[in-house]
Image 1 (cartoon, rainbow, N blue to C red):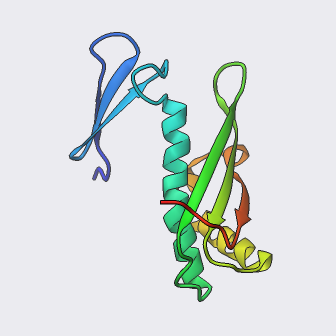
Image 2 (image 1 turned 60 degrees about the horizontal axis):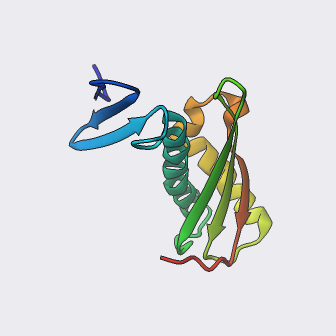
Length: 135
């Protein structure tokens, strides 16, 4: 049984449209008409890790972490392959470093994208509490 199905179409050049359910993603290998596949992967990783971080907070008795923002950055090697990913996680809640480390460890076990990536691409994570987050 198939759990996920997508359709990707390129009519010319290096840009494509991927249909995922009712959603369309414009992705461009050259980054001219949309984000590159590597950019999409890094954003997908962060968008998976953030709710996993919230669940990790709930599992440690911290149901209200407030706003959370992940600033992600990544490095590419000479072949344009991802070689490193880093997350700076800004959390409105003011918790101690040990608690944030516990929440982060739990999130790593929950995030499906984290589990799917080869270990050397697991994000290097720094968490900053008592953060003022706009938006």
